Image 1: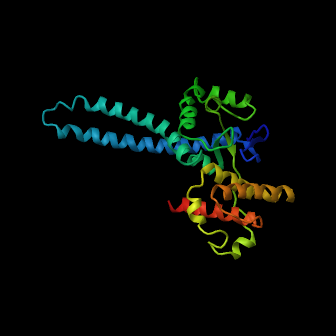
Image 2: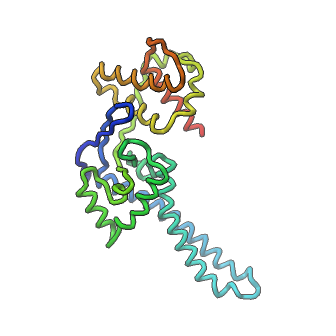
Image 3: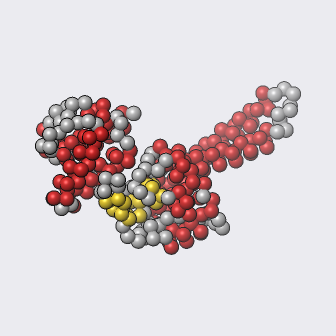
Length: 264
């Protein structure tokens, strides 16, 4: 069962407001269960390797000294590996996958900061280290209680890190016919080079606009496109003469950014 308590609005430095739907208990639980299965596979794989190495280790020591410690050494190594996988899994994926783990990606969830920006190593570390508090007493009893009482479905780690988990409806961006009829370089020369310096938060902002523009008032949509495009143009020292078609420009920026990410 999915339970959400309403939209969460983020106002960007560009004075653009975007609404996010906090992820409910149902989707978060399903994502966590999938992540649990993946982590369990990794832990099992490590334990198998450690067991095999432990069985071979005595034969590598003719003196027999290692035979007595191989068992305890294997247990200690296995426990260490479990701890590294359990914490490192979330820390690694959330920091490198822009707030997503395989489970969250499968169910279209993402961890973001309360200001709408992507999370980093610090936020991921704080929210996942405090996962130990959520799990006190069993299978997340305290964490579930805090999420249930929270207006934005935040757990203890989210409060401490200033983050929240949101639902992300990501579909194919409807591209305009103007973009389809233009060549790669015809909008503005050198765009591929400039896009290399685009920040993740800027990309998210542009993509959010392109995904939701069909729902906007036409005048508001045109003003937002102009504001977003001109901020990039000023930063990249591109002169448009005041007559540019801004939405195709934003479409091209997002398309080039995504193509670059796939190529890395």
